[in-house]
Image (cartoon, rainbow, N blue to C red; front, side, top):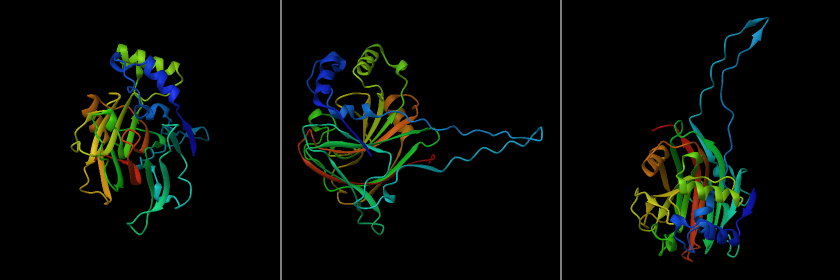
Length: 292
């Protein structure tokens, strides 16, 4: 598993050079809004028809291989407790001065002890990201399971000071930068100049919220390139395993008003650096499936 970090100096420079909506604010480009600046696109080999020539004659074209029913992004159930996470995950440290979120493989208190990932954040903000290119027109539905011990007392999806969650699932998209508006293009080009070469310009942030109503799409308080979608809210189901199922294609349409580009990556994040609280969450397998 690879590891990289984003230092506070980079965030300070980002604040100076790229004030959101041209309103200077020392919070405007907080690390949470940059979680996905490290994500990049991994291309998949395209399926095609194969022509074979035999004895000078063209053999019948082989039938196109059927698409799988699902694409598993995070197979945590295949990991071993106490061992490293499955290959393909990268850690992103968002605060070099604070402790990292701890991610470990443990056995769940369900389904005969299926392995899951346990996340513990104590005034911390570290995510696990997986780069994967997926066509949301073929696999529009995202499924996962999760559990939290409690929600954050000061959590608030509408405020920068409350932009923490015991559990998040981020989905980033390979958005075409040529479609950006004039001022967004300036911001994007400045980011690339500063070394952020792979900047996802659109993301959905599925969260276990403290108080925001389930299903209400809220712009991230740091950037409207990320839209927050509460899947659970409040503590009515704290301590319980919950299965989530969201139509990413439909959510993207509702959030951004257009068809989604390909998915470029998925991440899990348990963070409490804004509120300074402590949170514990558990994540099960994450997968994309065909339409409902």
